[in-house]
Image (cartoon, rainbow, N blue to C red):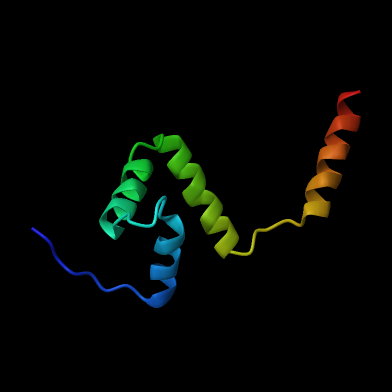
Length: 78
């Protein structure tokens, strides 16, 4: 049984980019996405969700901040 779903053009473009070969159906692309998402370790999923929430709340750091922090931690170990 088949059904039709409505996606905006941005989502369609993203699905097009995920196709492995030109004849691959959107059904196969979506199924691959679902199959790759479902088996994620629950702790990993929680970590991703936490990171997304932190990003949405503005808790972001520049690359320079991260490099500086890493350097300081290395100095503390010596």
